[in-house]
Length: 315
Image 1: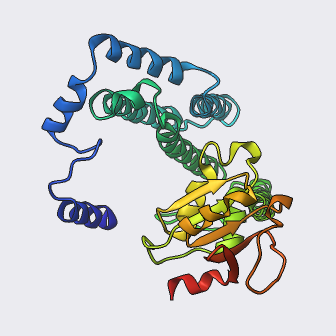
Image 2: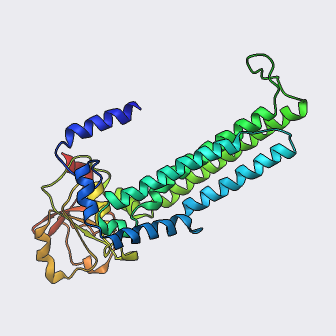
Image 3: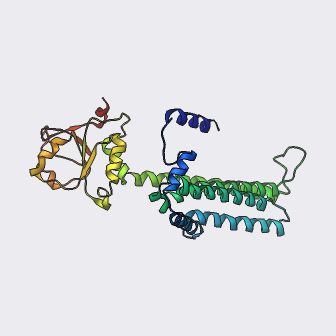
């Protein structure tokens, strides 16, 4: 709770007098909700319920699958192991928490979310996934505890590591722990290796390789990015956004074509970032007379380019 309390205190002091779309105040609720007509509210409610009841929703699938797992495990324990697990009680409590959380999300879209975002349920799956992960975690913990308690006998006030019904149940417990540990590690390494291998080909990966990750805000210099408009990376501004983030600068424009007769436009910028090779750039000259290469940052000096180390930007 300590980080939560400190963060709330910080935002209360630092953002005093500032209103955002999620400001928790009666005045803000009235202002935002008054923008929505009754028809708009009904549309939001209808879309919300369609989304959470759709089997195509990843969050809904997660809830459904773990409800099925809970019921199956409970009845297996009841009729085969002759054990009365508390799974259904925990499930009932979790369902109540989920309903309250979902109701809170619906209220957020109605009372605090701007109309344009609320109508399309902006970020809904991300919000719901937080609760679904919590739900899955509690169900999993409870299932593990119930299985564990079904495999040992309580000997005295404290559990003894030898307190198993039989050698067989102890062997099942140990083998299951080893198998689960091995699977967890293999999935973890597979995920990490896959992310590392694919990151270099993503937009953030390419930008990071070219300019690093600048930590000092730069509002003085202007940057021009040259790249192919692959997958609409320039048209939808995803590339420019990534460059702004890693250069820590708001002054970034992007181009995918360049005419030599328009070289004078370079003087409107301080730096040129080239992410893709292209023959149209052959007419540009470096002050060092080197060939232009991709994934490089160049300083613009009277229509001439000087390759620089991105680390020098913060100096």
